Amino acid sequence: MSAVNAEAELPASLKAAQQSQFFLINCLKAGAAQLIVLHHLAFYGPMSDQALQLMPALIEWLDRHGRLAVQVFLVIGGFLAAKSLSPHGQATPANPLGTILRRYLKLAPPFLAAMLLAIGASAWAGAWMAHDSISAPPTWTQLAAHALLLHDVLDVEALSAGAWYVAIDFQLYALMSLLLWLGARFAAGRQWTWLMPVTVALGGSASLLYFNRDAGWNIWAPYFFGSYGLGILAWWASDRRRDTGGVALLAAMMLLPALAALAVDFRSRIALALAVACLLFFFGRARLATAGRTVSVFNYLGSISYSVFLVHFPVCLVMNATFTRFFPAEPYWQALGILAGWTASLGAGAAFHRWVEIPLGRLFSGVRAPAEKQPSMIAAPGLDCVNDRPWPRPASAPASASGPDR
Image (cartoon, rainbow, N blue to C red; front, side):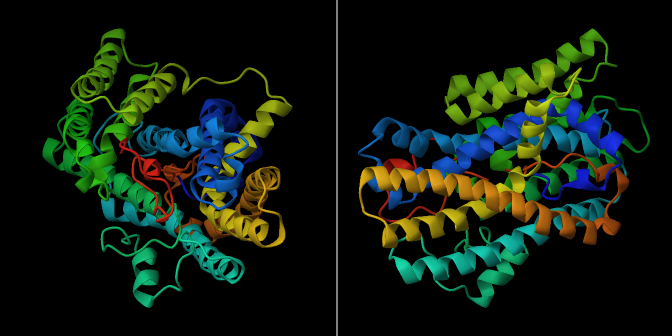
């Protein structure tokens, strides 16, 4: 999930060209972001507890499977990380510390602003209802851990449902930066064209066949590198300048480890990640011939997806409290509350994007390298969302909410 909307800093012609090229990515981000919002509205009561009587199949599906939308952001994250860090699959000798710092300055400032909103939302909601999804007032240790993106590593309670993904996105980008730098050091000037593709394929295989099958690793990048690596390989394989044999070999590096992992231990999240990677391989670089109103809408929803991801949980918390206190506990009223929460999340995300994400991006833009100025992504968001790692689940939530599909 690239946290900062760099599009706002680009000339209009270049911005339009990028939106044309990355329309599919924006569509995927927009759709996945909506699923995340709806998943949380279904996952956290009390509105969904009442609305369940009215639309049980939909609520249960969103509760169990909406969480898988995180895979879209993981794969897109790898796809765009490859575009930014190693467009042609070569190791790069660039200082990884500078690259990692720039990534932190993309992710952390809007994330911390959203955590302040989450703290305020918990205090507001706590005045109107009692529920396990409401966080206690934070400690200084919690705030420091979130500022360093180490809340999960330090076993500190998250301030918002999506906090884990921002930390994982940062870890994955840092890991990729370090691998490219180490590859350049190892190659020592020799033109080893296949060094990084083989490295990523081996790392992805280890993730898919081992780390991703052990939930004890789900606070670390290796657990997620399988999906992220699929996106990286999809970018390299979709390079039209490669010969047919090179494309076939990269596609095999992408497909075979994932299929083997599914044969050994089928996981729906990995199947989805592979499907998204294949979609990006075929169409991820395709440009639209024309642009209309529908294209503009999806591009806009894609551009605000990181902001929607960051602020939707505080908004949903307040909407749950509002409909608990001021509206009847009846299915139709509470279903209306879910719709209102979804709409309010989009509105809040648009406002946060304009008044927080973009200004913060401009504030820290002087630290960034020009190569990092690309369409925003959540993955990073980034788009976080859900069960590839569980959200902090309220004790009252059904056992199925955490699910086996981690």
